[in-house]
Amino acid sequence: MPALDPRAILDARPTGRPSVGVIVAIAVSSVCLLVALVMTSAEGPTFLEGLLLALLPLPLLLAGVLALDRLEPEPPDALVLAFLWGAGISVLVAMGINTAGLTLLWTPLLGQEEGFVATAVLTAPVVEETLKALVLVGMLWFRRHELNGPTDGIIYGSMVGLGFATVENIHYYTTAGPDGLAVTFVARGLLSPLVHPLCTSLTGLGIATAALAPRGWARVWPVLLGLLGAMTYHALWNAAPSFGIVPVLAVYLLGLGIVVGLLVVVRADRARIVALIGQHLPQYGPLGVVALPDVVMLTSLARRRRARAQVRAAAGPGPARAMRDYQQAATELAMLHRRLDRGLVDRAAFERQRGPLLALMLAARGVFTPLWRPEAPPR
Image 1 (tube, rainbow, N blue to C red):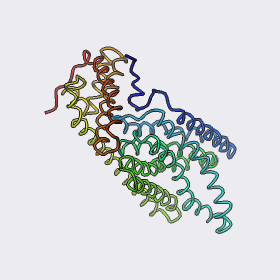
Image 2 (cartoon, helix red, strand yellow):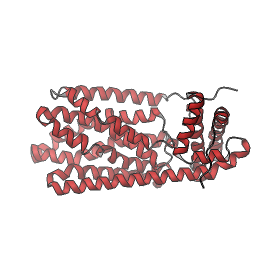
Image 3 (tube, rainbow, N blue to C red):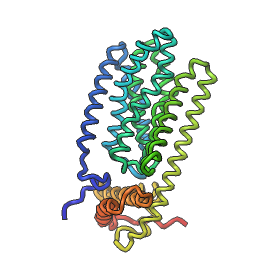
Image 4 (cartoon, one colour):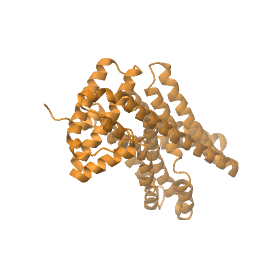
């Protein structure tokens, strides 16, 4: 029997390595990122300071986004692609289009100052949100199985937005000059670091909704609504400073409301996944891949974490990885059942994906079961 490749099984692909398409997209995005950085470095004397300030909050922001991804972690290559697409292709192309619009359209029509406002309010939201959305649409087309619910769309949208915001902030910090650098950092790095991730999360939410919908317009309208929401909030954010402090506060509060709404959606999605695990996994008890203590453990993030820690303390990282693979395979199996119930996969595809997941769960369970003492079920 050939050795199991957990990464390939969990990602539902032939091998655990990234596909050629993903590698090419990452490479192109990386080149675009380098070009954008070179162009930005020539715009002001504070490039290094701007680079450091833009990177300063990034670990915390990434940790916050990835904390949403604990129940059903997304493939690392897909997360890297989403971030680099936002930081590279989206930024570079947007710089060209926005500059062309300002130079060729808005400045001749309105003058330099009003033209800049028109570019920020009318051109930039449409251009930037469309460019950021392209990678999410690509996932809907080529890797729809990765979009198992609204949380996935929010995570991928946030990663694209973080990439875009990081490089855009480098530009703003670099061109602010020494006198305006501190004010710009407070405004963009401390008060509004989530604007781009927030906007693109709305697009991602629409994309994820479309991934769970049947073919036809049921897949189109969520994408359009999500993109429209992203463009609208982006435009409101850019327009508000032109009208005074009250509109700025109103748009800021609207953004906080959207953040709270997205967190409520994530919480509800997590509860849905837990319910799917409890609904579908007990039927596999006779196969030896799951028992009641396993289901109890799988339906709580805290109990999952404690189980991994217990196994790691007893026997090291190898068995702990087996426990982690078991947890993720069980979650993927529950969501695969949901896709079958909704008619998103046929029976043949379901069987092709279910078999390797069960094999991985059985093999992983054989590794960690002798090392794990299950917790008592909650009353």
